[in-house]
Every structure is written in structure tokens, then in C-alpha cells.
Image (cartoon, rainbow, N blue to C red; front, side, top):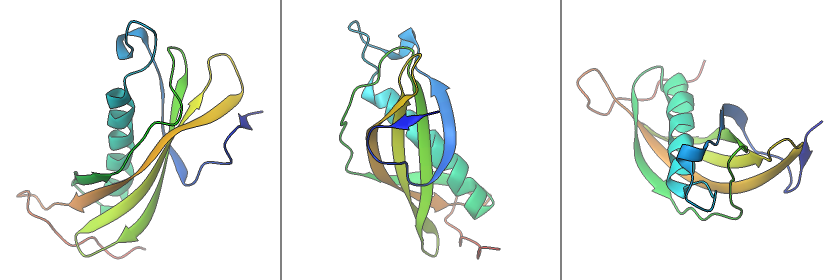
Length: 131
């Protein structure tokens, strides 16, 4: 059974991946840019589902790293569509580390991602109504 050290994640588990040596610096700490890229992938998955089509990242609002990720940790990304505008949506995203060979889960970082729905020609299009 998983033990959450920092409350519980908000949103749906959208992506899980293993932190490997190629994702780390010489001290074994995982690059923040790698974590952010995984968050962006998860947002792309969730936003494309909601938009029923192509989306792009328009903005990432403030991000700071509360705890490090280490080689062997499993990165778990949770997403929640917070707001839907005409062509854009804001997703709350949390990155959690399940520590290597442990049931401990710790929040690494969180941010708001703004995603824009695009048509076939790459121009912003309306996000369809839910349903």
C-alpha cells in the first residue's frame, strides 16, 4: 500500500515513468527539465482528450522543486483540467516520486499548464463542450 508523505495527489494519474541514469546528473539527481518534460507530456495527453484533438503548450506558470528525484524513483504525474476557455484550458499538474523499492510517495513539484486546442492548420480552435 502506498504511503503519501505530502497529502494526496489532486487529479488523475496520467503518466508513470521510471527515472533512469541518463535522466540524472553526476550526483544521481534527476534533471528538473526531465521532470518538467514528463509533466508536459501528461498535459498533452489529458488536454488532447478534453479537446478531442491537437493541443500545444502555451504557458507554464511558476514551478519550484520541493524535493529531488533520484535514479530508480517512479515519477507519477497527476493532472486535473481546472478551467476551460474558448480555445485554451488550464491544467493543474502535480509530479510525485514513488521512492525506489519503497511505498513512499512524495510530491516533487506542481504547476499550472495552459494548453491551446488547434485545428488541422495549426490555428486555435474552440474546445468542444464536455459530454
